Amino acid sequence: MKKRILLSSVLLFTILTILGTRAFDALAGADGKEDSAYDNLAILTRALQFIRQDYVDEKKIGYRDLTYAAMRGMLQSLDPHSQFMEPKDFKGMQEETDSHFGGLGVVVSMRDGHITIISPMEDTPGFKAGLLPGDQIVKVNGASTEKMQLSDVIDKLRGQPGEKVALTILRPSTKEIKDFTIERADIKVDSVKDAKILPEDASGGFKVGYVRITQFNKPTAEDLAKKLNELEAQGMQALVLDLRYNPGGLLESAVKVCGEFLPPNEMVVYTEGRVPSAKKIYRTPENSRRRPRYPVAILVNGSSASASEIVAGALKDLNRAILVGETTFGKGSVQSVIQMGDGSALRLTTAKYYTPGRQVIHEKGVSPNILVSIAPDQEKLLLLKRRADLLSDSEKKELANFHDPQLDRAVDALTGAMIYTEKNTPATGEKKRSEKDATAVQ
Image: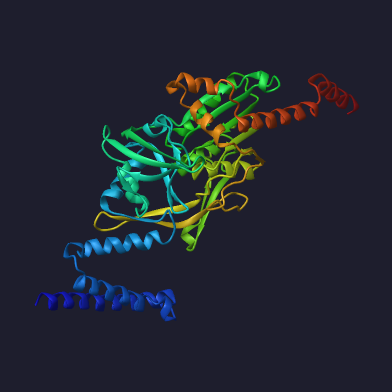
């Protein structure tokens, strides 16, 4: 009797599905069975029927469990950034968007089939513990990540502040396998750091400013504007903007940051997808402050992703900055979040970002004007430098003679540009004399 009821319910579901998809096929213009919603949904329903009827473990065949599993598989097969979020995952994503969540402070992604740390956020437990970009998470709390989805790993990394998480890391650069036990914390990140005028002995006597953006959140553009005001008040003649290890953040913030360097209403980035509604153009705010047009160099590397790539790509294409370093990560797609009726949601890739010069960012990244690679041992020291207050005596010794090759090359490029400009600009007195002579001739 139970089996008859089950088969009847599946049959009813199949009939309703078939009736609903006939119209969908007509709208989609499907004229072959391979792309027919009618035929393929019938296959899906048939598989669901057999699983519910014959699978050995009755605890695993609930309709919700099977539907969620199918949704996860569908979204995962599209690209690494599309995913199905169960209600608890969707709630966690909303908490992250508010820039306030419990975790280790690491940005992770799927790279070449491995759960990989893109960037540890500064001043967070993961950063302080010594996790590095490129580290592959092999185990979480003793469980192998080999068959885990990205969302499963993220769920295990997050949790109540004060709780500890055990990680086993494979570091490809050295082939080391390392174990970490890290305590979760309430993650709040200051995004604008280290604003200063660099020592003039390294910049030919020019005043070169330096500022670093660790990620793009709501107050980033406002904080950057304050730092730029301070540096300009100190006589800054050129700027190095460091976006290395910046995993991205809010698109709106990235556009506003571009507004600090570009004219009002300038196109920064646009999106295109399959449907016309996916095309959007993002421009600098109309009330953007007009700053002096001093030379700007932007530092980027393989851990510069998403919003940081938008800033770098826009300022490069619009000839407002030169890029120094390595090609960026290549995360340039738009994910639309579609909430379902039960509290779950789809994060679906619906468009790609393009720079003003129509360069696609996704899976290609933004290439630098000046390529400067950094060796693994130099990268380690660079990240150690950012943990200055946590260093041991031996680490401080290592850093004593460290020079950042990418920063040095950016300063050289800016210095060269300023010397060239200086040589090709008439002296003030000569300019005034020329203007006087011209007036006399008139």
